[in-house]
Length: 115
Image 1 (tube, rainbow, N blue to C red):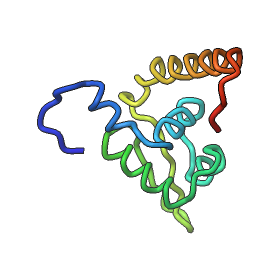
Image 2 (image 1 turned 180 degrees about the vertical axis):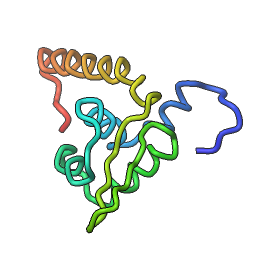
Image 3 (image 1 turned 120 degrees about the vertical axis):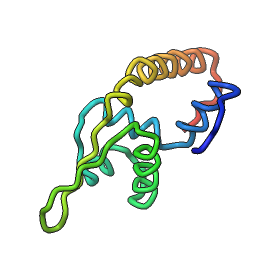
């Protein structure tokens, strides 16, 4: 993402974190960090290795995670939240709380549930 100015902080944040997987990856790393690639792949249900690689690269570019490569055969790679990435804890907790609350509201009203 190469924006020269932020006109709307919400739009900037959604552009940065949007999509199906980034928040799930960050949530997983907030629970346990560092994690190896295969651990992340198993922990983030339904993600493919290709998509995980793409999303991890994007999060690394945005300075939310860091990647450390160890000189083993085959190479071992660990992903860790950066100090700035850890600041997302409160936001992700709030999203999780709101999501559970909203799910209950929908359930009470008999609204169709999304998968």
